[in-house]
Length: 370
Image 1 (cartoon, rainbow, N blue to C red):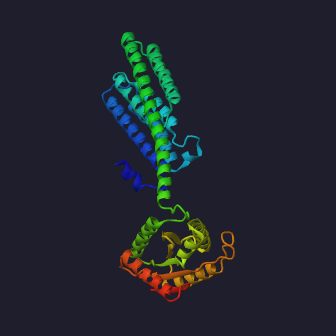
Image 2: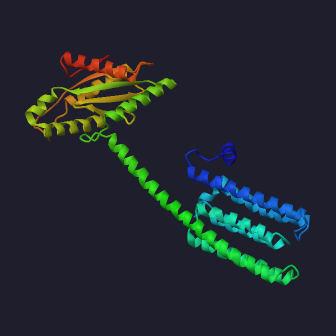
Image 3: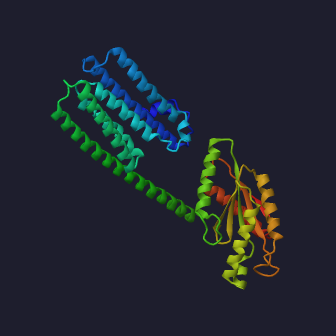
């Protein structure tokens, strides 16, 4: 029910998960205030409250003005201006104050009302450290002492010393024990959150490594195949298209045979750096295998993809790799095709592969569409 209300009246950005969590906790706090109010109404009806109905209405109206104000701070994002945007401590202290005042006003069942004090402490599990729990419990202890002293002086006929002392020591024991448990739970939550953050970072690094070619540092075959599937899904949704270029280095085997694989690796890295410089930010470039590469051009039709491939071929043809081999140049053969819905990616790759080999058969260092 809380989640449905939050979604229905949401004015919080979808990606602001922390603020959504704060608002949800605020709704839980309002529910706690509602049940406290309902229980006090029952006490009033049974005649175990020492105030009139009119006084009760004024008192609880004041309670709810603050309850709602605290919630609106969360709902409208005003809480973000504070050092503690969760407002956990103010909400707990206010809840305890309301509970203790009703404990004083109740002629009977005061111990039942003290249960709402523990309900207020529960919210500290979300945010408070043990020092803050200690502060909260000391505040609650001070208010309960005030209740007992006030009863002793103003309602001596209701004050039964042995019973009140027994309740007081039970209250101290339970509240401080409960606070310590809540603090420990919060500490465990913080520890797990830190561990989860580290785990998420490690998983991101692992995923990045698994999608990156170790030699050239560009994306690898696994990444580009996943990208092609995603591009296909976008075409399926409509108003989208893309083209693919398969690139092969001409006579690269001769480079390895003549200069060695180490030099060949340096040529590969230098070529990749050059190609990446020529691409748009939305393009995807990856090593497909050996000296073959795949280039995915989103929102590019066959005609424009051929022009892009031709421009890339000419740039590489004019590039000197003097820092590796004096006066050394390489050329590229490139096959180009446009995705045709509803074909599968395997068919797309087969077509662009045919186009690439056509470019190689016709003399290399050229672009062929397929």
